[in-house]
Length: 107
Image (cartoon, rainbow, N blue to C red; front, side):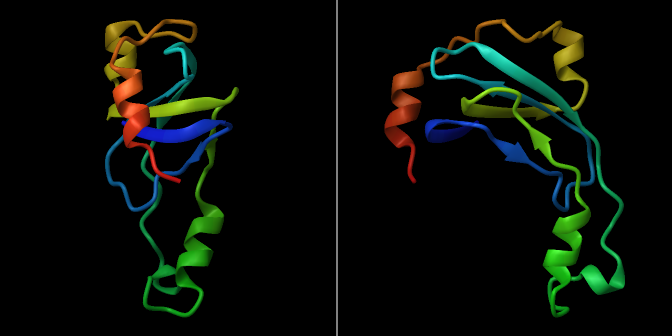
C-alpha cells in the first residue's frame, strides 16, 4: 500500500519487476478510482544498466506509464490476476483504517 499526503494523479511503472502486478488507485474516501494490470517490461539492455552513464534514464524513458484516471490518495499493488479473480471494479469501496495510514504518510 502506497500512501500519499494529498489526492493527486499518480503514475506507476514496472521498473525492474519480473512478474505481473495489479494496481488499484483509491481516493481519500476509499473509493476505487482506477485499476491497472501491469505486465513485466523487457529486461534492461546493455546501455540501460544503472552503472552506465544515462542508463537509468534510457530505461525509464521506455517504460509504460500507468496513470490514475482520477486523483488518488492510495495505490495498492497485488499479484497479477487478483483483481479479476475477486471481481474488483472501479467505483467499489475499499475498507481499511485510512486515518491511520494517512498519519504515516510523508512528503
